[in-house]
Figure 1: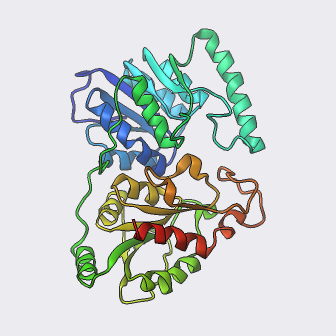
Figure 2: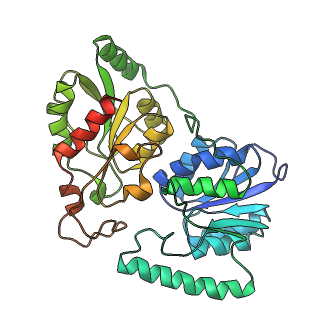
Figure 3: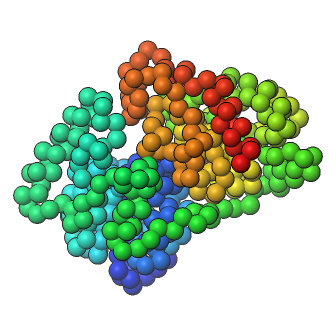
Amino acid sequence: MPHSSDPPGSRPRVLVIETHHLGDAVMALPFLRAASRRREVTVLCTPGVAGFLSAAAPGVRVGACGSWRDVMRALPRLGAGDAAVCAWPDTRAQWAMRRSGAETRVGFRLTEENFYGIARPWRRRRLAVGRIAECLLSLAGPLLTHPLDRPPVGRTHGEKWTAITRALGWETDFSFPWLPVPAPPAEFLDFVAASRAAGMRVAAMHAGARLPSKRWPLENFEALLAGWFPSRRVAVAIVRAPGEACPEPSAASQRVFDSPDPLSLAGLLAATDGVLSNDSFAAHMAAAVGVPVVTIFGSGDPAWFAPHGNAHLCVAGGGCPLRPCVDRCEQLRFLCLESVSMPMVEAKLDQWIFI
């Protein structure tokens, strides 16, 4: 059930449906910040995202829903809001928005231009099923009052939140940081200070990702630790996420630091000069705290999911004709990752260091 320190009903209300992953939740933060200044905001999201948003978006009420059935069950307890929004072209979300009783419902049309990974047959089938459901449900009235299309400029998923904000008559707040950033541990600050005192810039390296198809091989990261970073006199804070392996240091100017939770990761990344990451939550978190990030893309598409303001530092190979596969690899090997070469990543790192 949603919770908040604000008295319910004290301001006009907006319902946000965000049922995807942590990286997607990070991209929604500028909208949530802008909305919470004007409305009482409730977000219905997955349990894995709920804890993060509760800490990252102060003043926003968060409800954890493990399924669409949970979303529908939560709606009567929320009461009718003034507006409901979703950044995904999903008939289920749009039906929930209408069932919420919101007078204003802002979302994206179910079109091929708005649908991610439409080249995959199973995604085309899902779009077709969604359109059929939309037609049937629309017999009782339109699902959306403000149907949108993916912006022609700045086409990333994050920019879709800007389109939603403007449809509501506001402007998105992209000022950094997008979330509260805790101070890093003293040992981390000591490492950064000592590195800078030695005339070195400090990078963070995060080699984890939710899916194997998004993880560039650890040995490639270790090759960079042995070669590119020492040659450019860049110290490296190697960030180890819970339950994930991380590259081994190759020099005294490289150390491993643990990041037990998302906000602690924000604190670590914000204290550095730049980040090297896979296409993951960490990449979007770096963008959220205003730090340049070189992002290695495997199965994902940087045209949709480049971290905010860092599209020029994304690395993506062309080795797989099925990319983006939307988390369902149909090849025998991860050709998308194999086609990302060391020189390609080093070129982007050079571009970062000379900014």
